[in-house]
Image (cartoon, rainbow, N blue to C red):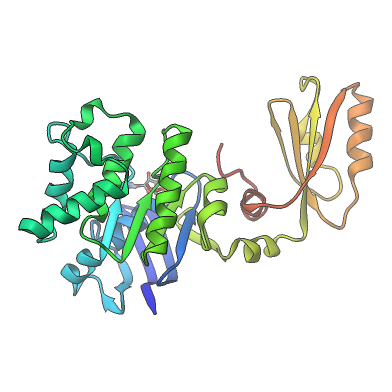
Length: 311
Ligand SMILES: Nc1ncnc2c1ncn2[C@@H]1O[C@H](COP(=O)(O)OP(=O)(O)OP(=O)(O)O)[C@@H](O)[C@H]1O
């Protein structure tokens, strides 16, 4: 069963098209990743799915029902963890979760039980009487998650939940996502961190400029670009390297100098390594190491768009 179907969805802000005619289906039980650089349209798409923003065109179905015509049904089945923290500093952790769960009509002992359950799930039970102003960034994020899951939604949407937090909280959140999924929840996870999406998502849509430019499992996405390869050459000093000149070499699709690493993406069938090494030698550039990289989602994005996911 598809928990979510998006058909020809478009959102414009004045003349600017933030989401451009996208269509997608997400099955129950998936951890579905939206991967794309800042401004790709991920949050706008999520806000439309969550019913927080109206589309200009297109349709969204939640468990087979139109989300606009059945907005209460949609809302009850969705939990959103927004990118910007949505918690009240002057309410305790318990009161925060209670407030949000209360918006879904939960009352009395059932409400209290669900709030305890959600706080327990994110590991904040012992902090329930404390105020979030004393929490670390990671703890605030976890509280944000508790607020979104206490009404036991079937579809949980997380918008960049690991931005700006310490590695320990990040791992905790990624593990919580797996646990929620094991408990039967479907997850939509947006990020511009390729590593996280690769790590936890069963299927991925790559977004850029409001469009879904590729969709599939990690393996399927990588298979799209088997005609490309990456070579990373670490040099002692990058001053004398002219990336524009390297870009002109046979088979080179893109070139980037990051710190002291020269990253070259080339067509797989062209052997241009000799030319590149010759260029470096001619310019008396000392090489520290050379590595041929296995393709990953970053390479997929780079090959499809000519740009990096993160600038
Ligand atoms: N309310 C708005 N009014 C005008 N433009 C908007 C509005 N909301 C978003 N945009 C624009 O739409 C585009 C897509 O934004 P969106 O936030 O959906 O991207 P994103 O992929 O989620 O990126 P980020 O990771 O930075 O949030 C951006 O260019 C943004 O500036």
